[in-house]
Amino acid sequence: MKKNKVVLVGCGAVGTSFLYAAINQGLASEYVLIDVFPDAAEGNAIDLADTMAVLPTTFTSIKAGTYADCSDAEVVVVTAGRPQKPGETRIEMVSDNAKIMKEIAIQIKDSGFNGISIIASNPVDVLTTIYQEVTGFNEHKVIGSGTTLDSARLRRLLAEKLEVAPTDVDAYLIGEHGDSSVPVWSKTTVMGKAVKDYLDEEKISQADLDKIWKDAVNMAYVIIEKKRATFYGIGVCLARLMSAVLRNERQIFMIGAKLNDQYNHKGFYTGVPALISANGWEYILEWNLSTNEQAGFDKSSSVLKDVVEQARKAIA
Image (cartoon, rainbow, N blue to C red; front, top):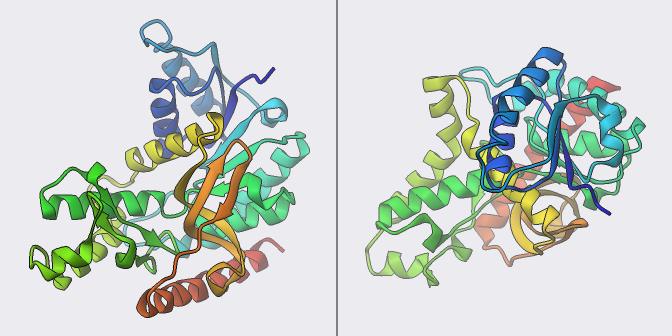
């Protein structure tokens, strides 16, 4: 019988926001927290345990633990790494966090873990690639958070402009979780109506779309400048991805999946539409991108390939 056990590695703001979201949604029965600072793991476990008596859908246990606890977990979520500094890009964090990720990956592998890994440490595309290469885990059982959050931001901003609910908008950013991500306007719809129709009807302009894209890409910098870190949005996104795994939802998300000639690239993780199930991500959905969208994705992929090589050298 499955224990419905989840292990979190990294008890900072992102990790604990994820746990808080997961616990409130009743996603798992057992939670284990691991952190380089044991008191942080223990303190958060105690704090979160206080919710057990009042939640309508509760869990059976939550505790601070060690990597040995990964051995029988269904899902391990990794958010550990040093935080992004004001004005710093995600890519600039690569050397420090690649070394941290290598240490984490080795300990998770050594535990005998055979479940699904969800990675959110930044730069997430690069570190998901490093994690999978270091562990040697089946690439389909390693999921990066990809452009899940980026796309959520794009949906919200477009919805605000058109004065509709974000849930009525399907809009996507593809490629790097970061500065080089690309909007896929050719696949964007609002209540099933193509965004191109809104352009033709002059309800929105191309300049509006360009601004929405840039605002979505730069959202993290705005938040970091104002409150030093982003964590609620990504925390909820991670809980949503974990739900898709634990409940075998077979739903498509904008996750970090490893390319194998899809979109004309291979050998690294990046944000693409992929189906998630209890097996991890099963396949990548290939869209027919416009010429400009493919060119943007090619540029984003080139950036990532270079940084993945930097990360590999940093941990060699």
